[in-house]
Image (cartoon, rainbow, N blue to C red; front, side, top):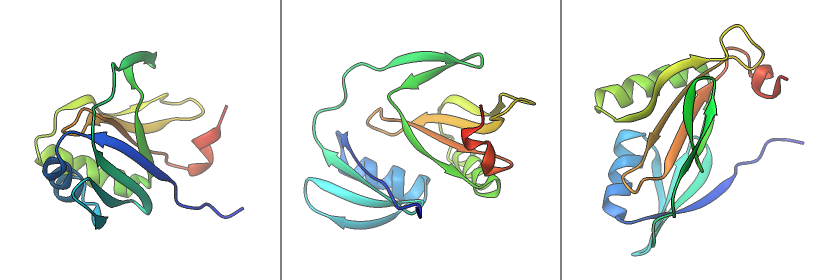
Length: 138
């Protein structure tokens, strides 16, 4: 089956801040919008920032020595795109939850990863593999 874009809707407290973050910092093209929501092209996937109540509490799970925030969403990029985004985020002086790093080094599933939050506190993960076959490695 051919991979199809996913759709994710999530709450934000400020649409202007969401536009600046997803559009200017992350580099997502804006799609349709209204006074209550904005569509973004999130690396070929459709995400929709909806003005509304923020999420409840976030918890963390230990993964390879880091406290990974849950819930979170993100995308698996090519290594070149991950490096470009990592540099872009550093230049924007982004506060990372988990700084850009490589985890599971030398093991199945070795991956470059970074975690951050958007202005409404939604946790995001961007990751990349040297070989995408490792995505589901056990």
